[in-house]
Length: 124
Image (tube, rainbow, N blue to C red; front, side):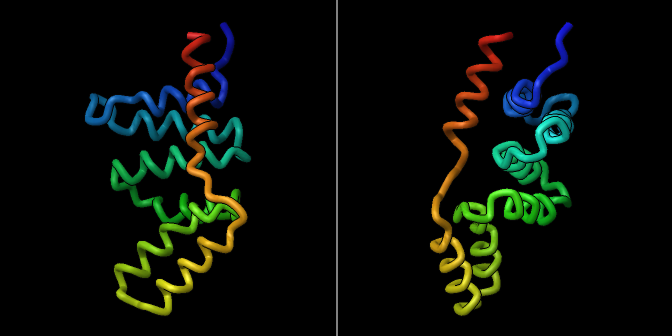
């Protein structure tokens, strides 16, 4: 039998049932996917989304990893804006907005994720 690809594991993580018997299964699956394809920022985005839902303690580390993988993506800097807003610091809010706007693109990885999911489901 063929080993699952990073896309297959990520799709399984995306389709995981929140609140199921193993609530951390999606997190385990996406971490396995990232181990197979560490250069794919869309996989880190999935991990970050799952981590937010589970309130895991690795959020900052995952955000930093995503920023390192795709620093030109203004979107990956939005957690800095959320943090600055929580502080109520106008200078930090302005700096975060400037960092977001300085990126040459804004990418939520939607297209990549849809293609990956459809491809994985087609093979299943």
